[in-house]
Length: 204
Length: 204
DNA sequence: GTACGATATGGAGGGCCACCCCGTTTTTGC
DNA sequence: GCAAAAACGGGGTGGCCCTCCATATCGTAC
Image 1: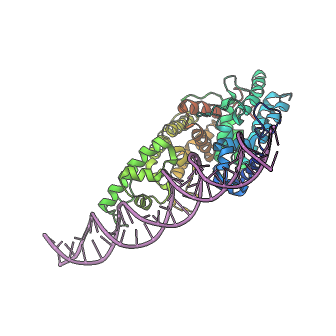
Image 2: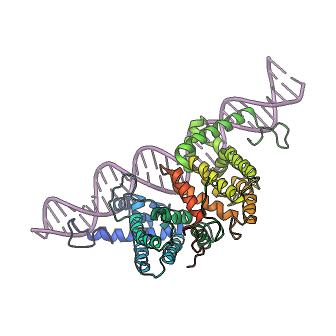
Image 3: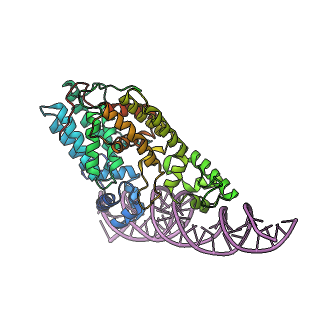
């Protein structure tokens, strides 16, 4: 959803050329990020979009904003998946499935993990609507259900869980067999290092 | 150990001024990396060291080399810790303790995780002696012992385990309460998401 | 102590980048 | 059509990484 595609709005609708450039930049950014990851050159994106670099910066004041716009629909899809899974008869399984889906998306869409990881932090008070908060909200229910069904430790937070998944994806996203690695590491983290049945706790 | 401090050596010893600059650069790099992480500006490091940027590049042909030199002693300490823990009566506990130690070091020494994560990969065939391989070798024993004591799943590799730890550290290293977060996430990953006693496996 | 060859140095410069300023062009509402 | 508002983009600034090569410094043999 580009900022002002809706015509009836408190803020004036976008001018036609602005909207066209906005879309072009988004398309070019998607391409470039797929090729070079979240650190893709903004100038190259502008070049590909056939737009001056100033225009890019006007539409997306920060790299994070651009990333969020690029991945908005993927994130929405993941949120929808979460909603579907909320009806799953096995809440523990549902949570695991969802985290797996995030991992799969994050590894095959370079830059997504980075986008999910950083909230609207650092003096960018775009209240709500960031990828980070969207995913967090979507996952909270899933985790709560899993907890209630005694399929997840009660002391684990959705924030920690997502941080774990994203950390894994970020770490393996530029390796050739990233998908396989992410899956293996996530499975490991969910099940724990100790063999099933061994004492679970850990002290240091 | 600077490359050629030893006087009896197949390669000629370093010239005194070269050695002085080498040390200065290392000190400046440690400072800068502590402040700005693994992506600290090389030019600023050279500036702080009072040397030209060419000198820095001559001594450390790549950022990775510089990181490895900066963190060499920390890594050696971790390896020594591993050696000590190899005598621990509880191999599972020993492994967990060691991984925790890595996490603590990695979070409080910004850049260490990044240095540990990347091996000598990408056309930099500095056979052996990289941080990555040192840590991997040190951990292999610990994991093998834990496995034998049935305190770790037999199908987990030391590579995966370290990747997990480093991923976590990389993800939280720039947050204010990084140490606490890293510890929480590592504990979670080691113990698993499922409450102790629940079925361990996960399918997707 | 001096002279000389080997070694190390660092400033200048090239290529790339993010970000901003401001004169110019395009769009829109009337 | 027209004027005001909105958007544009070339070009400038400053930062970064990295390399070249004329110069300075060191170690040594005498």
